[in-house]
Length: 146
Ligand code: V0V
Ligand code: CO
Image (cartoon, protein in one colour):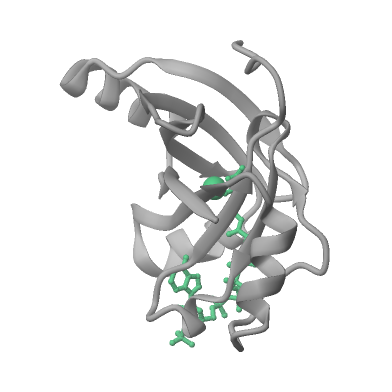
């Protein structure tokens, strides 16, 4: 069951400048940054609020580390902006299988590693009315903050 907005993924050309915009304008602070080689991004997670299922909602700011990555290709075509939305679930495997059974393309056979050791998969935007949609199960235990 999808129980929250886990994050909104925002593509940007310059992560540091974009982080500074969110800090200076709204007061949002960076909880976590990492490079995800497989996904081709350098990212910052800004925690917006905690949620009733024990998780949280974030903004995920994404800078491509390669032009031929999903975010690099998308930025070249569209410029900066909202790249994807991510729903949180305790069971990404089960929810992805159920959604695949409804005829929506799930991009990965098995969930892959996402931010803060979460497990993630994606639904094809062309099957979701133009919205690249991610499903996320957070890593168990306290979140790494660095
Ligand atoms: C592409 N399209 C999109 C889109 N990206 N539509 C809405 N939102 C997006 N973000 C459209 C694009 O305009 C084309 O439509 C069509 O899909 C095919 O796009 P393409 O440019 O030819 O690109 P593809 O087909 O090579 O790749 C598109 C997919 C790719 C969605 C398959 O971006 C992908 O695998 N995404 C999942 C991984 C990802 O996004 N990773 C970065 C975030 P027209 O022009 O044909 O109409 S990593 C992350 O979120 C992490 C680590 C985390 O949360 O922890
Ligand atoms: Co994401």
